[in-house]
Image (cartoon, rainbow, N blue to C red; front, top):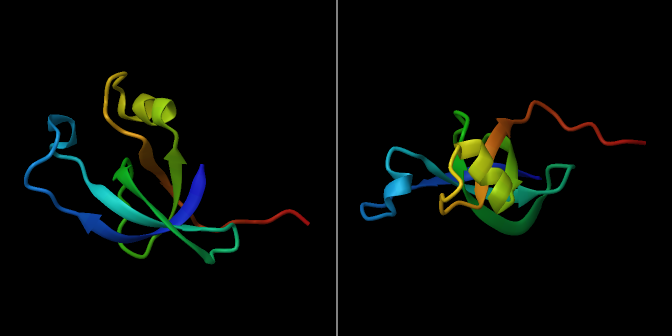
Length: 90
């Protein structure tokens, strides 16, 4: 899993049928301290996250398919939570 911040939403008129009715979010990856790493992922929204929200992203295909309930879905990343805070150890 990775942490990130939603920076945008993708709109596509032509896409795989699996993505019909699903929101695709652009998520800028961040470290646990909230500082951007310079990388990003595109993820399906499994929660009602929006631009500016700090989020938790499951970035692994098999786990992502389990979240969306399909063993054949063409998906790798899913936003699974909106973060309230991150407490770092020691």
